[in-house]
Image (cartoon, rainbow, N blue to C red; front, side):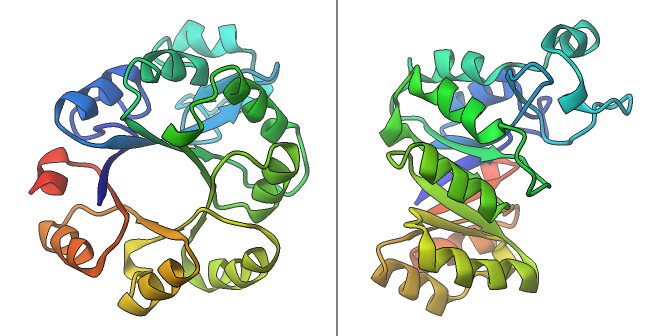
Length: 223
């Protein structure tokens, strides 16, 4: 079972930063989950929310405008430069997208990833099934995972699963049942679940055969 740091190690380091990712590595985790989205000029930065802490929309800003006030915000390419030196360290790259209207973010993401390869080190996940369809159309060689929680997510799962060869399912931990794991494995799909900060849950999911657990605290994940 892979143990992944949720946006790095957010309890001790700013989330989605190289310092947090490095700490996840030295803490003994198998990899990280992180968030990426585009700037106005198409650079893919690592940040969870659509807006910066000062309220400005990331998609409306150029990279230099963001880093002028928030220099800790890295590019996806900064992460990949670092991660290629650690080929056994797993990357769950979540593409942020709350809209079904295309702004080219899927194309920008694939363009960055193609410069590095690293297919066996990466899974791209998203809550947005339309983004997953676009990613697959752009380059079917990358492994894709569907993030979901709630009834709407389950409805989309049924629809996406019929048309898209997903590598993995990424349900919230409250949605993980033994039957789900068994069914996914029968269909040759993996289960990665989030955000798990309870040691008992980590152990239960290990016994059940979950493929990856994402959490905030390395010590909890490692037991």
